[in-house]
Image 1 (cartoon, rainbow, N blue to C red):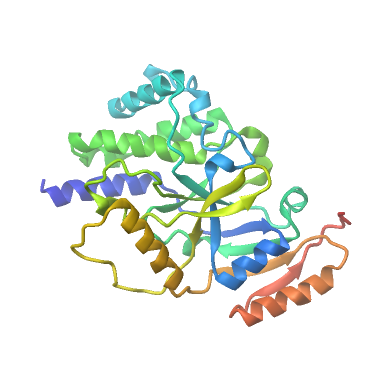
Image 2 (cartoon, rainbow, N blue to C red; image 1 turned 120 degrees about the horizontal axis):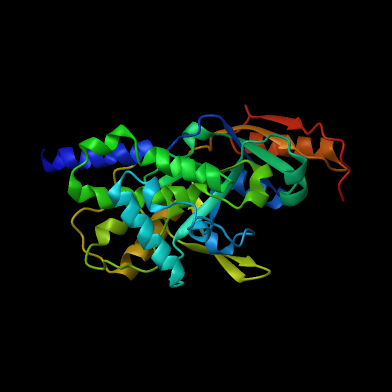
Length: 314
C-alpha cells in the first residue's frame, strides 16, 4: 500500500466517524445578534471554555466509568480510552482551542425563546460545514447513548484496511468526535447540533507553520462576566487561490496576515432558509423590520414567519 493509499484509508475512516446532518438547523438569538449575522454574513463561534454549560466538551471526561476493557474489540481505541481516563485522574487540562456555534433541531421552541432571544434563523445544514476542520455534530445526552455510539464506531469495517501506524491517530479522532457529541443530560430538550472548529492560540509545532494555515483568526468580544471572550468568525468565502506558497512565517506574522486577509475576504450569503420572529409584544412590527433587513442585505427570498406560541414574554 502506497503512502497516498494509507492516508486515503485514514481519511475514509475518519469520515465514517462523522454523521452529517442534512435537515434545517435553527439558531435562536437576540435582535443585536441577528442584525450582525445578516449584515456581515457571518456567525460567531465562541471558545467553549466560556459557554453557559460549565461541562461543555468535558462531559465524556466526567464519565470515564462508562466503558470497561472487555467492551472494546479495538486495541487502539482501548489504549486511547486509557490515556483519557489517566489524564482525567491527574486533572490534566485540555487546551482551550475549541470554538463552537450552537443550533437546534427544534423549530419554534418555547424553552429556547425564553433562553436565547426573540429571533430564530433557519439554516440549510448541508451548506454549513464546508470548510476544512469545521464539522457539525449531533449531541447525545445519556451515557448509554454515547457508549453505544463509541462501541459501534470502533467496529466499523473501515478499520480493517487501515495500516497499523495510523490506528492510534484514528482512535484519537474517534474519542475526539465522541467528546464533541456528548453533552450534559440537563440540556437534552435543546436537541443541539453544534458547529465546531479548532484554532490554536499556542503553536506546539512552531517549525511547521503550514499545519496551522487552516486555523481561523481569533477575535475578542466584551462579556459582562469574563471581561471578554475569544471567538472565531464563520463565513462562506468566495473562491480564491491566493494562499501563500513557499513562505516561512513566524507564529505572529502568520496570525497578523490571516487577520488582514479575513477582513478583506468577500463573503457569500449564508445558507439561510427562513427567519422566525418569536413571541413578543410588537411581533408584526419586528417581522417587518426583519424583512427589510433581509432584503437590504441580499436575502430577499428568505421568508419571515411568526411564532405560533401564545407567550407574552417580558
